[in-house]
Length: 112
Image (cartoon, rainbow, N blue to C red):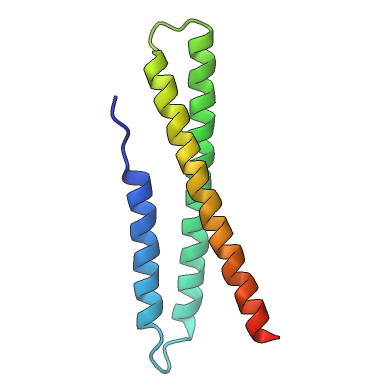
């Protein structure tokens, strides 16, 4: 079984497209309703990413439990790959959170 990298590539593509939209919105007079749409888009993308990480972890735990119970359709390889996939997703989410907290802290120091 191969591990698809599409969730990470998708998250990266969403972040890049939002950055491009934000750069395009820097023109004078463009900060109105479109700025609110970008913020909602970012919040929705962030929530979708967190939900995906949670779903991957639940799936890995369920598959692990099925293997422990002796299900014939679950192999150890699949369990290990899914556990690693869930771990990588969690680490990715943790790094994103760390960057967001760092950016927030920087903005708070600028506004003081």
